[in-house]
Amino acid sequence: MQIQTIAKFVDQPIILNKLQQKMPRVLIGTGAAFGLYDTFKPSRKENRFRQGIKNAIIISSTVTASLVGARGLAIGGKKIIKGLMEYTPVDKLLQKQTEAVNHFISNKKPLDDNLLSILNKSKTTYLSCKDIETLSTKLPADDKREALFKVILPDKENLNSGEIFGEIKRLSLLGAVPVLGGIAGGLAADAVTGTGSKRKTADKIKEGFYQYFANIFLCNVGAGAALYCAEQLSKAKIIKPLQPVQKLCTILAGITATGIVGGSYIANYLSKKIINPLFGQKTDQKLYDERKPELTDIALHADDIATAGVLSGFKWIEPALPLMYFVSGYRAGIGYRNVNKDPE
Image 1 (tube, rainbow, N blue to C red):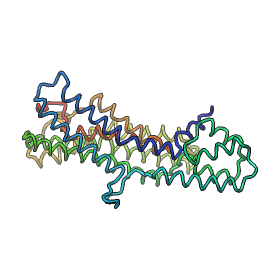
Image 2: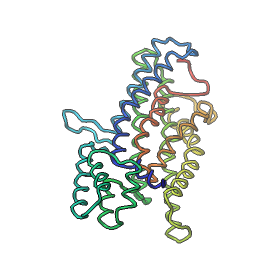
Image 3: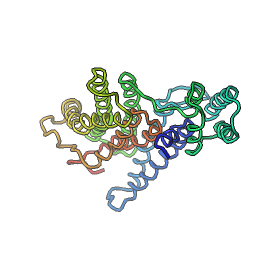
Image 4: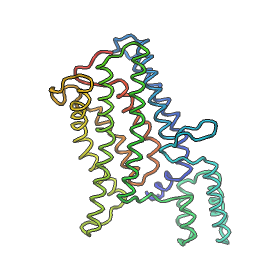
């Protein structure tokens, strides 16, 4: 079986729709499971009841923000906030596929029973890899087949640098929303439990800066800059146009250069020069006195790999992004500091 067949399978509109439908339940379930673990873990020395309340507020706020950012908000059937992730109800997708199949069949007679069966199957559900391979090999490659495949088996999007920067803006907003939700939830949790302080408020804002700049925004900027450079080199005939896998590698290189290498430095510098003076804190300490990079931060860059996949045209990765950004939101909500941090 060809890799292209598998790629077409996972990028089917119905498959993407199913992944998007599962995302809220996975996100809520993961948040709840993590909250219970963090509250009752054996190493916890603080008051578990108070910690449980704080976790419930922070996780609920972060999850809610993630879902609203991704799917939007509708009240009484009226859309109040537009989501940042494209979502089409499954009935509309099936209606569109049915129209495309009917149009193709009416202009492509006769077709054998097996092909008709596969085409009719796409009116009600997704196609298997075997179905896709059959259609790809047995249907004549012409304009009619191309029009049909654009609807039921679309190719990966081949975004240029201009479109990439548009996607970067969208994905950066998608990452900012759970971070803001986490900070809001953390402040609310401190207020409810009476554990707030000026320093803890500053820590939440600084960790929000760290998560957004180091783990989200600058990585996205690096991805776009790397692809733009590659595109200009291609236009100058210095290199050949990038294929999807080459594009993915180029984007990952840009992410590494700006986010993973420089992101923590820039985030800590901004915290020291901007946030510390606002809260009356010292600005003369060393850059990494409060927050130094750690192995967990490197692991968090899994969301950047997912982002690189989305920018490279692999749309099936996108539904997982809210779950990955949730971790950044939670860490902002607890004001995570790994050097000289206050006990909860």
